[in-house]
Every structure is written in structure tokens, then in C-alpha cells.
Image (cartoon, rainbow, N blue to C red; front, top):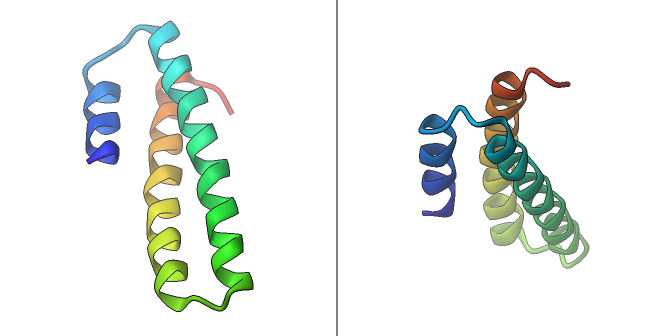
Length: 73
């Protein structure tokens, strides 16, 4: 649900300030998801590995969309 809400927020705004805030928030989520994925690997927890890998893919796609809208790299 959080991912869907983020997508909607991105699609509905052109304000660079709001987009930058969304970008910063997304970066924090990516970092958190990477840490959770790392822990899953350390615990050899395949269920969590698959779950966090899928989540990371969604967050990275959102990042790509934000980069395009912000015209940053």
C-alpha cells in the first residue's frame, strides 16, 4: 500500500520541493530495505530474501521515476 501511495503522490505533483522530499523519503526506505535484505541473507531466510528483494525492486523503480521527474542523476 505504501508503494501505491508513493506512486500516486509522484504522479499527482510537479512541485520540485515535494518531489525532492519524496525522493529523500524513498532513499531512506531503500537503505532500510537493503539492511533488512542483508539480515535475511545472514539468517539464510529465503522467505524474507524474496520479500525484500521484491520490495527493493519496487523502491528502485520509484527512484527511477523520481530521478526522471526531478531531472537529476
